[in-house]
Length: 126
Image (cartoon, rainbow, N blue to C red):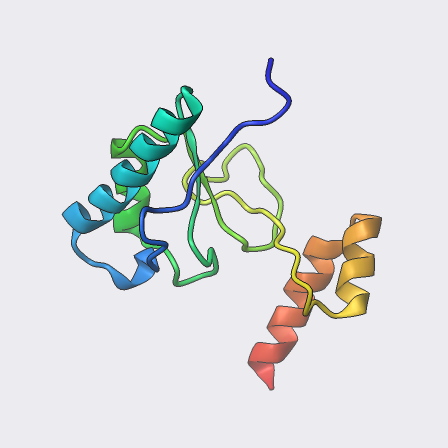
């Protein structure tokens, strides 16, 4: 078993939520996947959506992810991956140098997802 797996974004790091043409999305996915497979000599099965937030991918993109041969795709949407979480929109944390200290500490303590969801909700109310 390898210690880690290599995944990919897209060929040109485009925001897939802004693209409505399935063929263009498919091409972005396949070119990235093929290039990394050529470099690593291993099958690339996982994708992280460029930018990864709500709106940065779509149902069209999720369908193309599966057609391109990926097993899963990750977002940066906080939350918990449960049995019914779609494998084309898995939750994953994203750390940033600009992150508030309180959020970083919450991440270290394992409470990031809950705190981040509350923080985001408060920002939308304001």
